[in-house]
Image 1 (cartoon, one colour):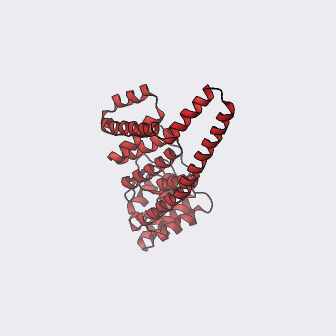
Image 2: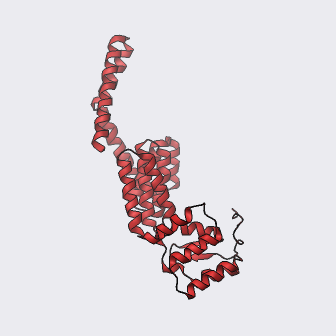
Image 3: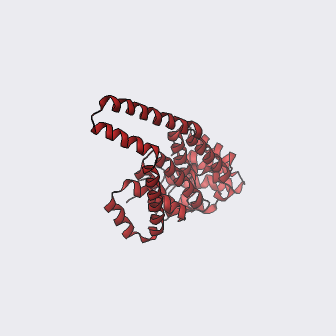
Length: 279
């Protein structure tokens, strides 16, 4: 897939590597967006003479490079250095530069990320799923690629919330990404469990045939599913449903309606009790 044309300077043939976040960029726009996304992690390491050289020689931004070299000689702060790049390139929406620099000044790195992650988890626990998912997505945008463990944790959290909402296909996508970043047994289990929930039997078996690394996880999933089914069949909900079917077959409409209302009321009360307990 080709890269888009740039409006600040030209597209570079050779990328610049932002070592702090292990990311390669091919244009001033990509540089600005990367600085904005990962502002929490930017420090003196970004004040790299090679960056000024790259902007001049590879992107044709000679005036910007001249300004940056002057700041390097004058030992300006990383915030001033990044601020000059953002101002001269003018790639971000109005007002965003100040927000990026404020985040950069606050710093915090992973401490800041972990606070936001805890906030997202609290939102999810209170039932604010959309806000939680939006926060998770923002965190993934801000996290450097090298933070694979934390990125995997966030993908797992996203997957758990989708699974709670019975959106198993979306959950599987999230758990799969978590496993790719951090191939832990826990991630493999949740990935396979989500696939088991939304795939039909043939599709699920074909997946396992093509991915034997998930055999052990599949065994655990199927064992738990069998136990859950056994508990359900012997539980009160199953007995209530069997009684409803019997009344319907016998055409006892009045008794059926009464029993149905009682069953639904009980299920609603049970649901409310579980939701209240989780808040």
